[in-house]
Length: 116
Length: 237
Image 1 (cartoon, each protein chain N blue to C red):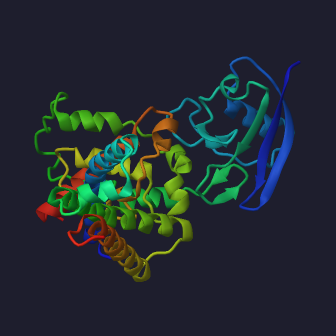
Image 2 (image 1 turned 180 degrees about the vertical axis):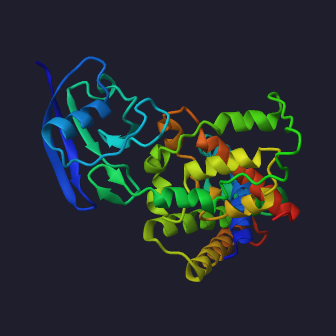
């Protein structure tokens, strides 16, 4: 990976961390509200399905995770196993895409109009 | 007479601790203890020192598990139970006993372009740099480094990533980035960028905690991270 790309990855992780800080806070407050209010799963789904605002929020959350986590894992793996080079960069990309894919699957499941 | 129980590393990368008893004295420094052992107990003990007053940066060792300059570390500060374990600095190859090979440490200063590059000659006027300017204040905060290697020894990232330039070299680069007379800004920012440079720092603050001069390489490295990112986005590097 070029040095320029390494610097940009660092920048992306910084910005995604800022987004995540906000997303995690909103997510936790929402969860606490839902649990303390005694909402059932069906009641929660009834509020989330078709909600464009919540869909947009959790899409942003998922993409922030998909950017942030693989970059951190790349560093942890590199430092723990002394592994550098193209293989590690490919693995980082695969982890990021997987997180985005699974995350968006969950988002569509909870917020999509056709969710059960 | 009160005595100190002293364990000192003997050997190279392979070796073991050797036990000595050293008379406890008032205002005794760890360097005094090592010197006593070398002069009175075992003349084959190897260690490094020069000024004895915290200027030269050559006497750093690991004392009871912590990297320190030994000439200004009082025994009373680190050995409340009169026990001392003295080892060479971490993260550097051991030549013998308490002497480490510092080449890697200083080679990284060169890799980080730690040498001033100017554009004027002795025939030109002196540069006028206001002590109140923000650049000069940043230089002031990091310029007193004595190159002792304590920060490099204390840094976990160095132990995990042998290519990492380390706190001292990056601190030096930061002082030069803020030197308004220097002309190698872009080259230096490129030299300290990326996985082996400032962006590898995890902000553990071990260097800042241990620096005997009270400097904060962490703050300088944070400044370098931002400066390199800005230079990358603007196309400067």
